[in-house]
Length: 290
Ligand code: FAD
Image (tube, rainbow, N blue to C red; front, top):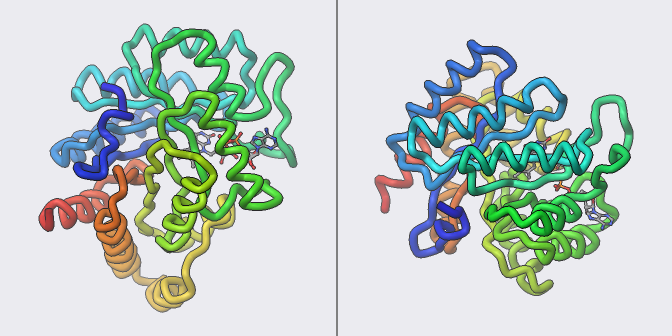
């Protein structure tokens, strides 16, 4: 199933993102999480592509395993980091042979210790080039990519970022998924600006329920997402009570999702961090209302 066909505001789909664990025990635990989330009938799940080399084969293995054993549509992420065109062609062939139909194409972050992104000789500098390459190679994938309601960390301005996103979409993307955000105003404003700029593909909001305050502070530092002042103050008050942090994180994300759905989003993509409870609570609450 091509994901573009399940992104529909009149019947929005929920999707869950996982990362490839480094150990076999981690993989076993992730597969249990997938089993626990399966009854929620996700439209699809996705597996990220490791920043370093070590977990990359696991992305292909995991999406193949999930699709074969659960029947859930599984999308593989793929980045340009460290790959030549030949490497990428090789990964694409493996994914196509495993009947994976959907890819999220990304540039990736600069490897640790590098200040800015430098492509390897024979590789790509921007996700847009990877999209064009996949389209030219004549694979029949449905293609998604990333977008940034608050602007990408490296961009000089949100206008520039939007211009680059338009070029990336025009190169052949079917949909985009947003970076996590905690204030829906960023998403609604972004969608409006994107539509005005002529970007017409579905823009799927990415939601990460806060389950650990230190972790969310680290993530937001890395990706530039803003935690609204009121939520930050509430988190500060309960930061030493792990259960209260989860309850607040789940409550906040549920309210976010309710507003997003009421205003007609085509789906919601959950950054699960390979854990099921928070996502289960939110999706169960949303399903109970519909
Ligand atoms: P691009 O779209 O190439 O943009 C990167 C920067 O370059 C932006 O600032 C953009 O404005 C600028 N730019 C683009 N085109 C041009 C141009 N022609 N000229 C000048 N500037 C330009 N990382 C992983 O390592 N693995 C994953 O699996 C992964 N999954 C992700 C999933 C989602 C939904 C999101 C939101 C992010 C994910 N990331 C992942 C992180 C992502 O790799 C980083 O955010 C990375 O820094 C940018 O990737 P991109 O594909 O958005 O890059």
